[in-house]
Image (cartoon, rainbow, N blue to C red; front, top):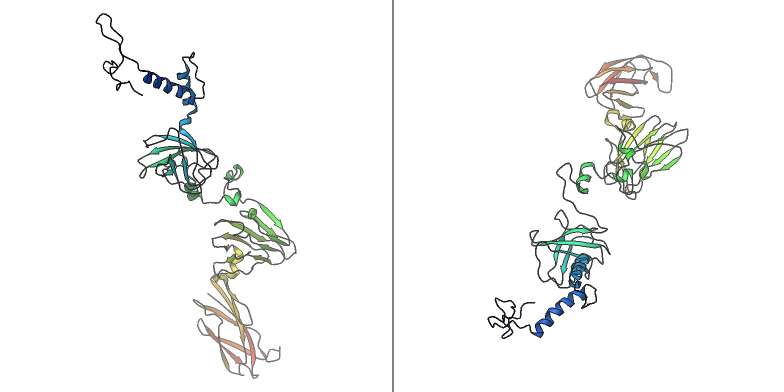
Length: 421
């Protein structure tokens, strides 16, 4: 809209209307009908666009119309006509060019599952970024939610910043100060994703848990018979008791989504060995033995911690693994040994020593440092329990010793025991 400058003899002075001057005889400006109609149509269009009915007796309709349109902000709101992740909307009047700071709203038809774009009135689609100026990850926009975006030409080659989205997740930048909001990725990296250990709904730990101090377990559960592990057992202490041959199946790390670092503590207070078995494709592993899908035995009076170290493997620690560790290894038989930490006890039988002769015996296991002593037991001839001769022993180093039969009866069997480290 403008003054009717193109109308011949309209009589504008400095581009504006002037009144007639009778003193000087200067005629006033003309107001052409076409111009008057155009001005009136402009005003009427504003009035009707606001929802009012034009009334020539009401001189306040133009102001009221502008106020109503500003209140509804309808010119910047439209319905999404695109698809999930590729949003578009048509605004009236049409958006023909993008200027920094322009804010638009639309009602989304679909939620987003990842990075998304927005295109108003057919303009080139540009990325939508979150408050951290990063691409959307999914869940920031929900179906039927209202979305606010603001144009920023300096982010990438131009991006729509997601100012707000009702019902959707909100992206924040990584915190760097004490009063900053913390991004979930920062929190997970700092404390580990252990929410399932306490609450399968992924909520933060309860106030009761936060009030604990030291190594306080989440609960104690006694049982007898066969018990199958569930997610709530993680972090707890379970013990089998009574004369029942108890057994326990560790929680299935796959079906129960058991996190890495989850711990189940078991003890055997019963009078029989307790059988521990992994479920599904899970395995157990001790410090000295490879991972296995087989069972692990808790003998009476022992305990063990089962820690999920990833890939479905429960790593076993505690005094129950002593018998399988290198420091307590054993070979049990007629000839054998038992390690007791640094000390080693070995035993065996020297057979068929000739009368008045000798026999060199090799220990089942060479002593790493020294054999302190080797003691013979009662000697007897084959098939007899009677003492038949005296046996002497000569030191032979860390791997053997020699027995001497000082008697007249041949082929005595001499049990012996050796101690060293």
